[in-house]
Image 1: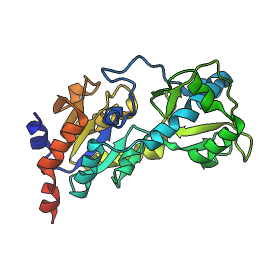
Image 2: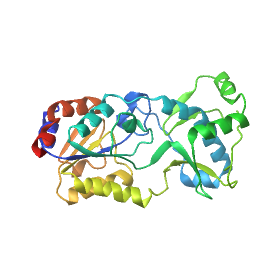
Image 3: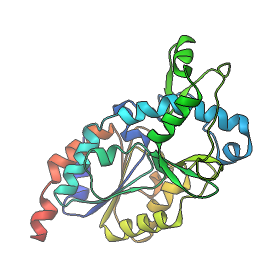
Length: 279
């Protein structure tokens, strides 16, 4: 099934763009997979403009971020790390915030949308770890987790949050340095990706001979623009996803397949080819 993928990418230096579909096997749900329930992610405008939305987000995140922190890389993440070590993969540009590529020991990772592990102040731009904020929120909301669990099973949702009943009160925390608004260092829907990250991702695409998209529907422009860039430059583009994507018309090859299975086949079929040729 994956012979065409191996033939297309063998002997080429490959930039990889990953989306939520690569992490579902690690227990992290996605927004747009064929088996995903309808979800309405919070927008940047809702977060900064409405204290009720912001309070609900932090209540959900206070429970859900630990689930993401505990998640471990699956065979797809490990295969990409192996491909990088073999000289096949030159960079991983990820739309995910779960740090699983870094946990799998990929070295050149561009976290396009940030990560769950950092929080920043929108006023003074001070950063703190999510673990530090967790301690502050725990002190401000003693017994919160126990009360929520008493309402029933906790459903984990994407982006390091969980489903929390609105009936459970929650107290937010402001920036300890200036009293400003704290926000996860994650790019929300309706928010722009920082320009330096976009430029680094473009450079990674430009530096490679081919682009491989894994587990992304390419619904939002933050990922699709890199497919358009590779297509503009005449580079081969392979897309592996469980459903159709917005970039299929630009692709050299599309496979509706499991991400881990495809990446394992690619690792087994191409590892060492580029590295040996460059030696």
